[in-house]
Figure 1 (spheres, one colour):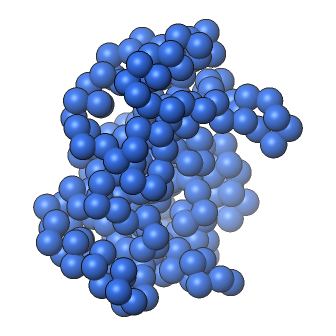
Figure 2 (tube, helix red, strand yellow):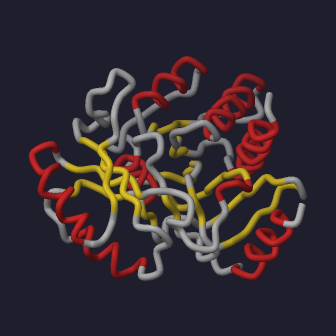
Length: 245
């Protein structure tokens, strides 16, 4: 296991202490969350946790959870969740996120909005002073609108790029949509950009998550650090410590 994978595992496992017996858990998507799934399954098997139910944010997470023996339900059976655990592609000091590298941004946002405690688990490479510094924003668009939304994003001085599948065809989400990975550069007017993207009928969802993280767990060379929303100085201190290592 590489050093980065070790950090991902540490962050994911640190989130499991917030999962109690009887909880309904939102199960995120991606390479960090897989360690949370494995840890959750281990605790269920040992009896440390009982009566856990999960709601998966993607077909891949659903498949992995079922293979590990984690019971799954739908929103019809559980309209609200106790806790949601997921990763992020980029996080800033205000705990604004860019998500969607794994293509599950729409379902992730739905699950996050319906969860009481939202936990984001990352390794230290995902921290930035501003979102957009390192990562393009995934924007899920309806196939019918892909061309007009591409032009709209270009009008914002952004650089949209259609995400492709391994065979070279357009990548298709679990919802049957396309993704435009859109480089805005460092995003200074996050609220204004979100308003513009939310207003477009052809955009099913975008990967900017605001107000959808309560607790950030970061694994780095200095250990595992937990931060609540509003702890900007703690975030910046950690970022500084990481950069001088």
